[in-house]
Image 1 (tube, rainbow over the protein chains, first blue to last red):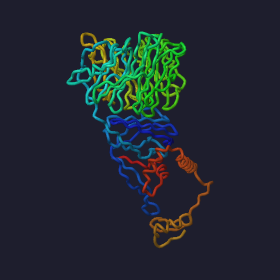
Image 2: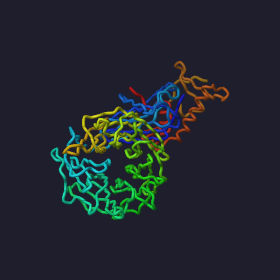
Image 3: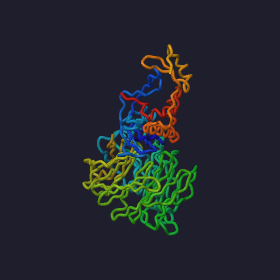
Image 4: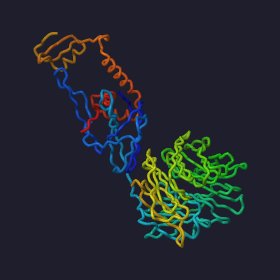
Amino acid sequence: MTWWVLTGLQATPAPTSAVVLASTNNADFLYMAWAYHKPSWEARYKTVRGRRLLCGHYWKWDTPTITPQTEPGDTLTHTFSLSNLTPLSTIWYYLFALEGPYDREIQGPLCWFTLPFMPPGPIPTDEPIYWAIPGRILRCGNRYTFWANNTWYAFIPTSTSLTVWKLIDSVFNRLDQANEPTPAIGAFWDADARLDSLSAYIHIAFYQRSTSPNDHLCRYVKFALATDTWGSPETAHAEPYHGWPAYHVSLALDSNDKPHVVFPRIDLGFPIVFYRNKVAASWSAPEMAIWSHYRVITCDTCWIDPTNDAFHVCAVTNMYLHWYNKRPAGGSFQATLNSLLSGTNLPQHSLAAGVTIPHIAQISQTWRVNHWEGIPPSTHQDDLTLADSHFANMISSPAPPGEICIVYADLNNKLATIHRPPGGDWGAEQPTEYDVVSPLTAHYAHPDVIAALWECGGSQDTAFHAFYAPWH
Amino acid sequence: MAKIDALPSLDIIRGFKGVLDIYLWKGVVCVRTWPVIPMAHRTPASMEAAHLFGEILTAYGLIGGTVKSFFMADSKGETITPRDLHTSALYGHLHKRG
């Protein structure tokens, strides 16, 4: 005879999906009965001492959908993932197990949540759109395409200028070319960009490499989408880096659309990833985000958890290690963690994604995916029997939470995807017919739309394609 | 035990609860002193059921705040308490399908 009570319950609704997390004091396998309408509340009678007595009520369900928990076997935590839901509707549900005391179901209370409004989503493109750009794309990050003003924008940094392109009548047009940020001396080396929550600005952090090591700059600029014009760049950090072959910068926006940047630099002769964020009109003092134990940092990336504004940063070093750290909103960085993932191949081709949970992957002869979940890290590893690839992005969808996808170029230089549903296993490789011959970038433009940008050969050297996510 | 002419009202039956037990037996209205079962006479099954019932009542304190708020919402405006609903749910008497 098994019985339990719900010690915790949390529903995370998205426009068309929801995840319900429950915890119980005793282990059991739970089911969720749910419907779009509230069940009727009916009286229950029994005859006592010859009298028909009201002895309570029960919720009478006619056609509920029964969804089992995603975890196998009897567990203390229980996850229920619902998809293809109707936005703005209310879901009524209760949790139950088949055999409780006296061989009856054991049940939870009637619960409910309402799905949020889903704004008009981006429109995928039927085919890739190809066009020529004035120079090679620099490092491809993971946020270079955006859906705003009912069309697509592409941010493409080149060594000589930062460019923003807008899709008008199936053609990408270069915007405000006269005011594009250009380096006074030296060249641009790297850039990262995000769209803010109001789709008002593309926020861009970029690395300006000078001819003099002491004049390197980490800079920040906004591109206004209302007028399609550039703002004035400002310096987030001076002399961020010299003496090491990497000039990266990564950007994230918090819930107030304030920028946070990380950049590797040398401090007292050691490579360190530093962090600064914009407070009012100035930038905060540099904080050490990742201490890589004297190893050369080759790549870094960052993101902010929208639910609590916690800042996440990870980096790769030339000793085949991944590093991760977290800074709670208003708090300080904790001790840097490394992934314990050591390999022999291509540490620079490391992937990172996450919204609330960091996901780190490494490309080797097979894909090795390592998930960091909280602190201390839970080292959950999957070895995927995929072809090697030099160009890949791992991205995570905000809805449903925990959904992750890798967009990459396969050995045949074709655009391909592979995804893993929350709590599930990695699906099959899904190649396309589209050629990808150079760095590729991708992100979720919407919970179920992925936008990808890559460099390709020939006179038209850039390609953009937006397509529905595998679970659409 | 004694026979009486007619079944009294439910308020009267409840008024004597714990003192007199008024009930029907083969259509005959009877009244007797309230039955008392000594502990020593309880069966193992009865003892186990009582023990489980006690644990279930105590477990109400383990319920999370969100869950408790749903029980409270269900019992609002009803004669039952959130704890009653909790007990009904654990015994499978809160939801009925079909």
